[in-house]
Image (cartoon, rainbow, N blue to C red; front, side, top):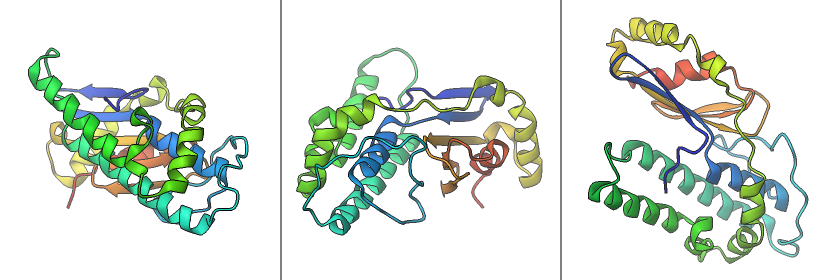
Length: 217
């Protein structure tokens, strides 16, 4: 299953590229966190959603600290799956045999993590979280918030590409970055790994794009 929904790809010249957009599974995981009242404090976890979801009682009586630990493990597994897809993008060309093989591998990766496509079977080791995801998953995906990043904000990034290339003494056409935006606030953003930034909707655009495009040391 491709993860580029609602994303846009901006390119200038033969190869520099910047992917901007949201990820439906990450956004849904945050929705489920906030709807169930799970509180998770970790450096790689965005703040609460800008628009709080309706409260759910699906975890009433459960140890929310324990479920919170399971949620954090799931969140990081989702991030790892998204990074794996970034490192192994779909092949170009038509939807031939190579693309089909990629799609099967990609779908299996997400199924192992726990996704709505297979009723979160990958969360069998965390039954309370799995139950919450099964009850709330469709509402979470349906309430997904589109990224505020607009095409007009993307214009002019070529100058930023030139700046990053000059600062780091590299060919501009070797630069490649991804920014995944979550429907959260507070100006929050983190560099998850070189070339990959996770950010709130209101994070400073120039700053996060510069961070995403900056090559590894």
